[in-house]
Image (cartoon, rainbow, N blue to C red):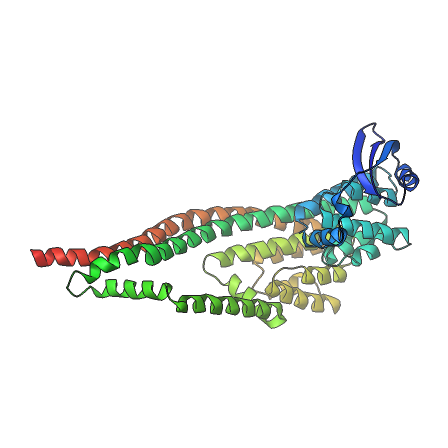
Length: 410
């Protein structure tokens, strides 16, 4: 049954919400166990939940709702604050479930609460939620549980996820501008060839003279774009994109395509800096949280986000497992600049590896900022000239026959 209730929390704030329960007495007991003072409970009238199969459809839609880094940051900060305040784990999870706005994350957290209530540890309960809590998150929570500093680990996780979110926003800001301008340029070119050039085609045919070669090329291209072959081209492109995605999901394909991204003229340097910043921040966060060195390298390898970085971390992992240091194999890998390997070597010698890695990550965050600004300032005139060239090429093709007629009249 659906109920609408009004409660007062520990701070004296009155809240209204709704919940499902077998009866009002069970809902009252559940709210009281969570520390609320129940003021009113009444049965809700007709609701969408009474429609057949509505609950199944709503649950399916909720599973499709994406969980953003922002949602994970808010959850981690709330979790850390309540654990630091001494609130019991089960009660903390219950309160967060009630306040979580993302339905998919709320469902996952409800399953985590049930798993913890059945006797599992928090880290083991998080492992069951695949696709929501990655290996990095679970490893840090497990280290926090073992060391007794779960609240501190959750705070570090929130800081780490927030830094990753800012880094992703910087990368997106660098990619969005050229992508939008390129899409507009392609759209303008398609509209001019498909709708504008055919208007002049009849005029060109009545001129009675031979059209310039460039104009004939544009008219042939316009006929092609309005024919069935254009639809065939689009379908083939979509099929090629599908198989490219499948190839990227393979280990060899991911390594090949990620290597191409790192070697691109304009975006390769930015991709390299983003990968290094992510590697250093992830590795430093894990070391600072008390995760063992080999376990931290294994987690970094799985969460690198770039196959080239993952392969390099795997080489470092194999050497460290045999008793070697981290800086020596890094120095032999061209992907890591000399500054990174030197900072890591100093951190190993002084015992402050986590601090050195954090400083390197902060340095490369600033480098990403500078690269984004430089890339944007460089691409802006290139894109403007490109759009002007596309429009101008079509306009020139349309006016060349007119210039030819004027010359003949003279």
